[in-house]
Image 1: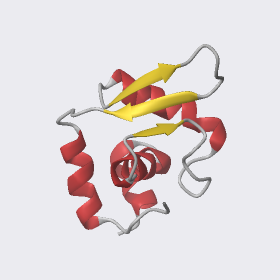
Image 2: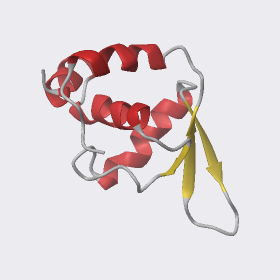
Image 3: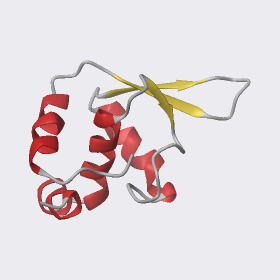
Image 4: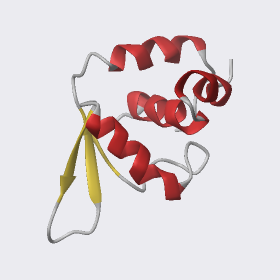
Length: 95
């Protein structure tokens, strides 16, 4: 199953599931906003979709005054179990 097709049909947009899968499979505890590859999500949509995950309590956002980068850290939200289940049935996303 393609993550884009499942993402569009189940989550409203293909990029929502792709982004969540990328975060779930990401090796580091923290990542910055421009880090997800273009094959996962368009850079112009990244901030909005990451904001949705912050609103859901799945991510914490960090803004450092001296640095323009916005960092995110995955939380222990039980909602990640939905993404873990999706990762078992859809094709892997680019890392």
